[in-house]
Length: 161
Ligand code: SF4
Image (cartoon, rainbow, N blue to C red; front, side, top):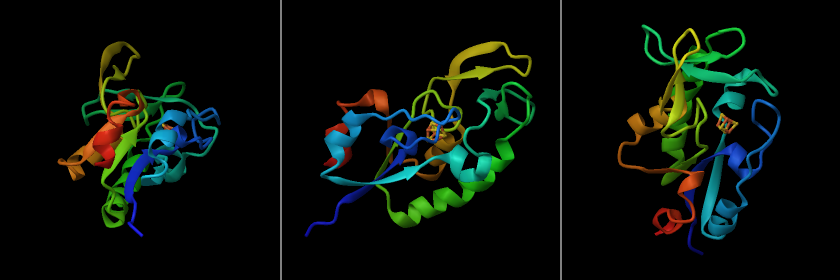
């Protein structure tokens, strides 16, 4: 029997209730298009790194140390917690042999592009950021195919063939 290719995916897109508010962002179209052809590897950076669920919402902020992920209400900086987990996870995903990754759009962790970026004072600089996990994945796997849920159904064939 032919072995299915492995594709990483933001877990909330597969229906896991791992968002900050305890909800999911299930995208049945992705599951329906790919379920027979791939083995999904679900990943939730914010839950898996230990931030809990539910958890306070976060955003990307500029800083002298580069882009940070901070709790909106308190300004608590969660970047290092996330990065510690991300640095291990990218190696595990490499070992797992994933062929592509499907990211949840607009998330400060998973957004591949166009994530809203803020100044420390809370002024929006527009959709010019990239999620912390997505950015690390791009650095680790520069040749890999990456997409967001909004790229479907057009991207589906490219992921599988
Ligand atoms: S967007 Fe990423 S970090 Fe946020 S809930 Fe989904 S998988 Fe988790």
